[in-house]
Image (cartoon, rainbow, N blue to C red):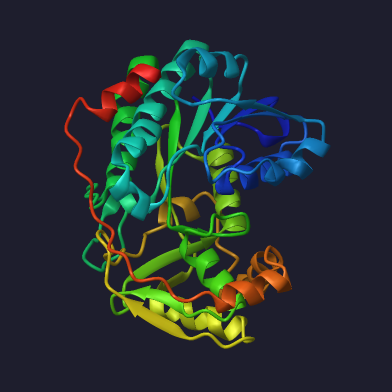
Length: 356
């Protein structure tokens, strides 16, 4: 199947469009697909926010449907006459995955399976699936290419890898074109404060120490939201059928270095760093080989250091001065260990499936 001309796309469906990544995708596609109307599907879990779509709604080109991507009838209706589907819905926080792994399996793996089936029913020309570089696991420190084995080492990564396997097993059956993006940590506004950068920025803004797990030497890759969105457009317009693309910027840092950058940016009040026991699945991540994406003409333009002043202002503005003073005076909580939760097969999982 051919790639799509952004100027002529008429109907786009974005799942998870009221969340961090999804809402930015909506804004970006509105700006670069002038004839397109966008349908947003979002289950409005804790990480979604209607206000993220305020500017998009004002264009008059966006409609919203609240619902679960695992609802086959609803998704099939949403995909009617769609030219492009961008699948950004799902659970994304590693620490939560240890507590409620079944929710991640349902949302990330089975939800994707349902979406692919609906896409096959509607004969949608193209889908972009937002996966994660977490699927590679810890690696060996060398750059990882798209043909590397998937070796997930936590429940989130496993659910994302499972989604990719379901796509691989279904797209040929339905004769579909589904292109996969595997981004590293995406840097931008609207991210839930459970994630590394928003948590560091908000704690620094109120003078609280930044919690670093272990020795802080765990490495992570980063890519700005603008660069991620430009990568998505490049894959839509010039990508290969059913291809997979790593998405990473030039930033590859350990957590302690990220904390230092935040403290340099948010200088008042001084907060410092506190070290805590490590958590499950908190291994280093390998750098990504992005030659396949660069062959499409894509190049990362942003960096974490350049983005931080804007991010600090955005996240800092969410907390009024009075509230900052109150939060600063709250005593530190006793550290809590994150424990993996093992659930017997057939208990909560199948009751959840019945609700779907």
